[in-house]
Length: 403
Image (cartoon, rainbow, N blue to C red; front, top):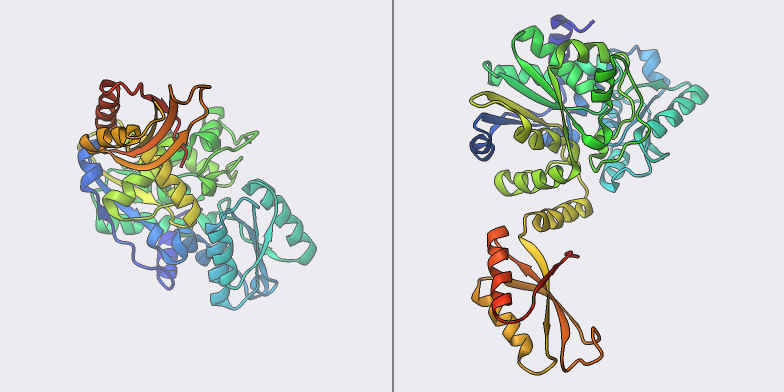
């Protein structure tokens, strides 16, 4: 049972290892949504995610014999680091099975914490099956990342901290993968204030909890397809599902494109790096059909590798028309390239790449194609630059931007 006493015990225990992640008020999102928006920045937590809470509390409840056999878990990355860290504190062995698609930074950080890493399968569920096999073969004690009430209790300590800082909080948004975080947060939140609303947020390409709630029982998706790797789960936990049914007030699903936009919003407005699963609750703010409410979005983690980060910045800029590519057609003679550059510069555009194709027609003296990638301030600025190129007789055509 998830009781107030067990949550209080867990809160006392996790304080031994967690960092204080105080709420951050967001003027930007408050203005955008008409609510008082706060972030719970677990991306700044030890190991870079909230998962250390549940892992440490669960392992603290094990017997010495259970710990001495060695610990094993399956994880897309953040629970892995939580278990590895907790195991190191207790001086016991940890084996972590991770999907082969896990971002490099999560794999390396787990190894740096002293755990043995095994890569297996494409998604969490594949890694889970392999972890169970290894547990059976070697006698390891399995620590489930979400389908465990002890783990969920540890995760729920987030809600206690939110209430201490913002007692009159009215909405809490929590990301959902398998359901451990939202179970702990929603259950404790309802114990502290039965009228509070807790909303779970899932990636649209892996909305296993939404499908299960609609069916009235746990269901398994045939496939999970999302850039939110930490929540790419095919099936929610059956142990936590009844608590979700009872305490979660709704589910919002978010498309991958919205996560890209949310990443840019957080970097530009809050100087925070948040991984895609943690961005679910940021993107969901625009779907929350309320105003004038005190809303807390849980940023569940910040373990994003640099390559993914660069890709999201580039795609976010393209998505917002702050970078675009236009083709113009002009005679292949001296001065024509200068004319294009001057037209763009006169309208405050910044050329960042040129590609000159002399072979688009048989007669290059008549027409060659020039692809120009331009940095702009947004959609209206982009439209102004394209109109200027049209007025200059350069026959501009927008093309897909490649960066």
